[in-house]
Image (cartoon, rainbow, N blue to C red; front, side, top):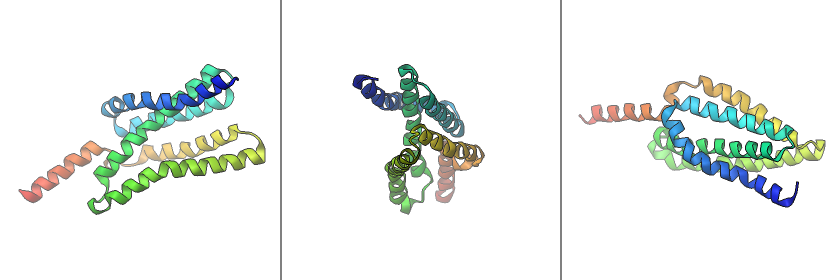
Length: 167
């Protein structure tokens, strides 16, 4: 693969993230939060898997594009979730932890990837490790009670509670 192909492949994650920003809002509006997240996680795992076995540039580009698109839903959902669910006096701390999680996860991921590649020389194993962590997290997400995920419902209940307290 020449340098233009490699460079454009690297940019596919960001192109996917940009497209994901446009698609995430209707997805979150149309589907229950749980299913929007689960669908994105499953598509993310498929995209990562495709990236490990294909040598075709278009397959690789599609894998990177969908990987980027699926990451956006958490970037949109988590700050809104923190704003809705965190205690009023700890919102800043919660938001900081959520924002810190992404670069910290990348730092840990790149560090572990470097170790795996150094020890085994099989770069694709790093993607399988990510998938192996995502599978149980996705299954756990399927069983989290709705009241901890549904922002709209939570805000309605909070508004009703505040009306009762003030009324």
